[in-house]
Length: 316
Image (cartoon, rainbow, N blue to C red; front, side):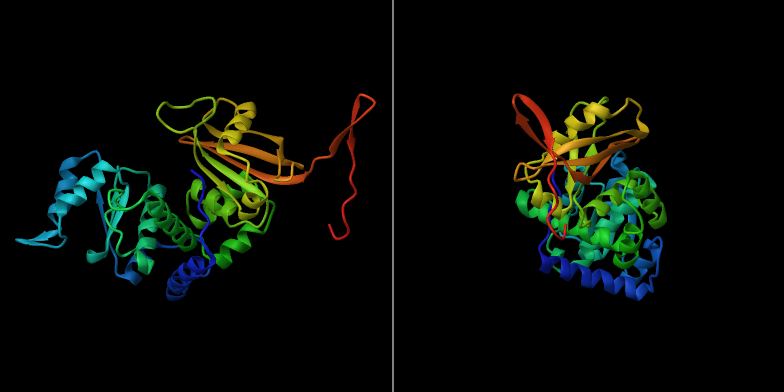
């Protein structure tokens, strides 16, 4: 799945509500404390377990008071959670967030923030129960989730502090890990934000290890591009990334998996050299690539080939 770029008006509207939260918290730098966020927004957090149906039923039962239902169809909540394997959801009427207790702690942080973003974005109030696909078109569902992902990212990575941190050195997987630690977030969510919000020619991929693919899962779950990369290199696909990774990744599951330089053609057929590197976090292979330089053009003279060195235009 490719990341979805939101329009300028939507970004501006989401930024306003998120900036208001940061202002109310008096945020300066470092990790956002979600307990403070929930308190400021008067949100409640509850846990359930997808692998414990009894606990899930108990959570839904507590959403009733005597004979009075606090949601119209509590059975629909159970059905949605089980059918769509939801790791988190938000109930606007109760201002309550539910998170699967069995997921790792840092993933809980992201899931909770994603649902907080749903609560912050005014027009999301009508989309409940984890954005049930039975009531939303796939396109609408993907856009709503993209908006919540953007809002969650802006909440966990406040713009001014994150921009300063992101631009303070050359971007690399190692730099992404440092930024993740600074803001107290997962490497995966940090990689996504670093690439998507970059003005540079960059892309990233999150998915299977090319030497250890698991059956039943897409090889590349998410293909994230910066806006400038998407504009100049629209022909690059997730399978291209998979093929590049297959050529240099080693077999281990954690730590650095490899790095190399690759040629990538832009929309005009010009070849560019990117530095690509991968890192294993024990669950996925995380890949990031950034532009290094233009590749020299190859010309043929009398049956021999040689690079054609092109002088840069004035101002380049």
